[in-house]
Image (cartoon, rainbow, N blue to C red; front, side, top):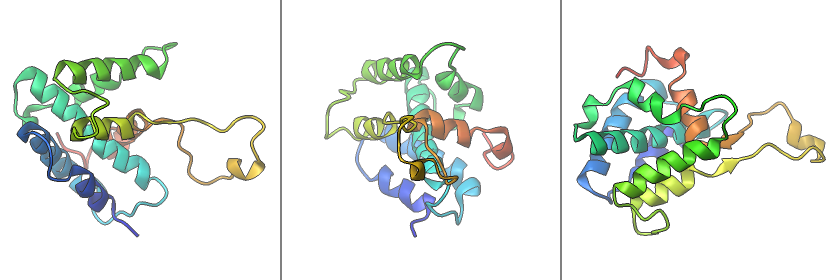
Length: 166
């Protein structure tokens, strides 16, 4: 079985600007204590998406603020996923996409590693339809919502604060 950190390193790859690689390095450094030895089972895919989303968030904030990835704080990352009551996650998605575009990324460019990762993370893991077969509603792990929101909410959850030290 694949380890979460191995999956994240695979997604990191070697492509992209130095700022992108620096954001990944910071994200992996932060995630080490949380994900060490954990496999891609149960909440593993959500944590992996959260780790990748953390790298994207660090990249956005560091580039916009002209700071090093190590200077990005938890509160700044949380501000990227704030969703006022009654608003759709599409408003949060639009905010991320506007910021990534402003940083010079064509989000449809298959050669841009930032855009490729973003397309993976923005995929919406919608709940099954009301008339879905009963096996879909088994008590196993569920994924509802976009990977970047779902993942970052798990990674930044209070239960993980002691292991994810900003």
